[in-house]
Image 1 (cartoon, rainbow, N blue to C red):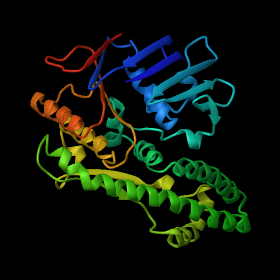
Image 2: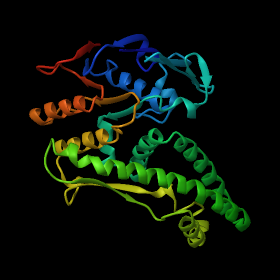
Image 3: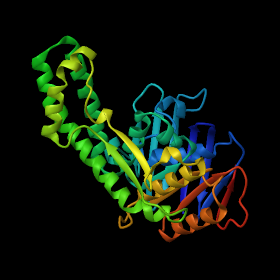
Image 4: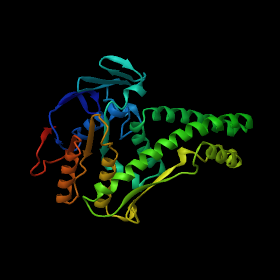
Length: 332
């Protein structure tokens, strides 16, 4: 059992929800806040929203701050965020840094925005990958923050045509960029080992993620930066590095773009489930936002049973209660 408290978060002025047993389904019409509940749980695990990059979008209209709290296994996780001040993170009443706050539990979420991984831009796919990686390694968030700052400084040096400064940032950027690359490579390798098993509950065929990058290690990255220097100076920006990487998804020998929406949804659900490390002794939650609509009923039922066998608490949202649903129901 765990308890979620929301104050001035999205559409909720003051809401408390007790989750007693799983699977659990949240029922309500569009705009009632179903997805916002999943978003709050996700935020408590990652310090990120899967819906928006803008923190102020999470704060209710006419309020200057929002509060979310999760009581989980004798651990009280709290986040207070403001429109104009830094976010506060607390565990059991003690204020701590963001890097130490994240990953108190593992979480994976499926929602309609995940289709951007298939139809969207490389930036959409990198964001998905980053959200996975920061749960794999808490240092990953810090690497991303440092890399972004260094990239900004190198781009400034490029526009100034300051070769000495560029060389300094190249060395620093190659080290941090390689840490990001290594974590991404590890996460993708782990998912590729497991995804085909979960896909088999929908249809046969090996699934995989292919990671497209343009360097192999720190020294290789440094050489790439050197070789692209002339081009980068003309552009005024850095053209190689993890901020340019991309992903492609395959089921069998076909790119996922060639499949139907129902099949793509099945792939994405399997992908999200493949993220979890089975042997990690840490709380896990799988969130599915209206994700079973359009799937074969037998396959969807088998998939839910599989999640339960994996001993991963499942939280679903839907506008209507599915027939023969066995679990806790929360109505909004």
